[in-house]
Length: 165
Ligand SMILES: CC(C)(COP(=O)(O)OP(=O)(O)OC[C@H]1O[C@@H](n2cnc3c(N)ncnc32)[C@H](O)[C@@H]1OP(=O)(O)O)[C@@H](O)C(=O)NCCC(=O)NCCS
Image 1 (spheres, rainbow, N blue to C red):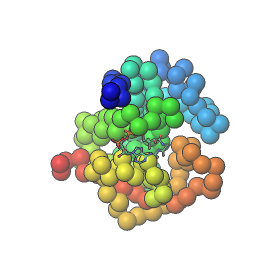
Image 2 (image 1 turned 30 degrees about the vertical axis):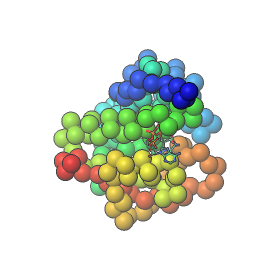
Image 3 (image 1 turned 120 degrees about the vertical axis):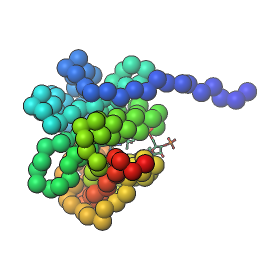
Image 4 (image 1 turned 180 degrees about the vertical axis):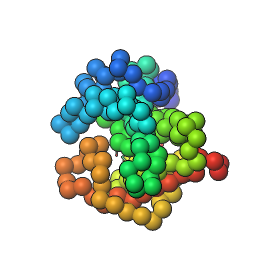
């Protein structure tokens, strides 16, 4: 008999204070305290926290930073992170798509992110969604999501048009 497939409900939406306990419960030594910090930043504006839900439970989070930090990478998707036990079920795709919709609704025509060229999970995900490397690189800045304790790698800047389909 063929193996049974479990169908999960996958959603992504802007985080609220009610999501904080689940986010905190899944913080690591590297991300300790950051969930509350991100929600506080969201309260200040131009900064959004999106959570991914699997069967109604928080399974990951990602950020959209629309603040102008002088780099021209605005808006930037940051720290996409799916809890290890919720991976490969579509949450990464769902949260990335939600951030794109949000950026589009805010009037942006493109979206940026930085990713290590050696990230074996994220690169195929971004390519699948139509992101392309700009050719620019920088020292990795959002290292909290990395699964490794190694020195922060260089990361490649990827861009996607939000108007050309
Ligand atoms: C990268 C990450 C967010 C992906 O999240 P996810 O929910 O597991 O991804 P999805 O289930 O939405 O996968 C979508 C597609 O991405 C690709 N992908 C995801 N994980 C992959 C892996 N480990 N190896 C190869 N391809 C992978 C596949 O094409 C996948 O489609 P498929 O499952 O139909 O083959 C997750 O692995 C993670 O949190 N990693 C640690 C943090 C990190 O690296 N964040 C990115 C920083 S730039």
